[in-house]
Image (cartoon, rainbow, N blue to C red):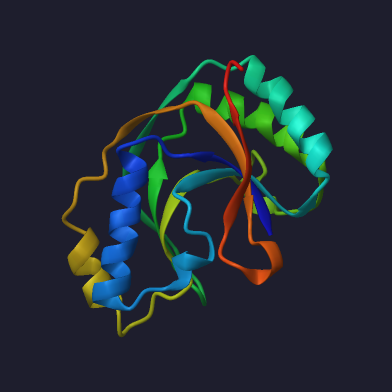
Length: 179
């Protein structure tokens, strides 16, 4: 899977990396290492026509000024492989921009993931990816539940990330907004 994302700005990029490290060392959580790039996703698919995607996203990014977003605490996607995340507040400007990004990315995608479609989208920053279990839940709770996750960030980029050849995730390209 590859994803069209926004990379987090500093100091939040480093803050998320530190949290991941702490959870790995103290709680044995390792799933996030599949894509160790602090971000949140706009669109996810099995495959993109990379040239078409870059062209489409560049056109969207040229029209977009930096966007201020807010986080609002922790959340959990429940199920067989739960995910712990920091939620982003879905305000009008974020939703409108998501519509533009979604259309641009979906036009260059095959095997798009429906959870990222505008009607279903839950913008989030993943902290624990698919290895939350009863054994590590107390440790994760101790590390996260009493922290403040009310952040204000200025986003200014779109990027394509993925896992080439089963390796840890990496950034294929990054497009600054207004470029």
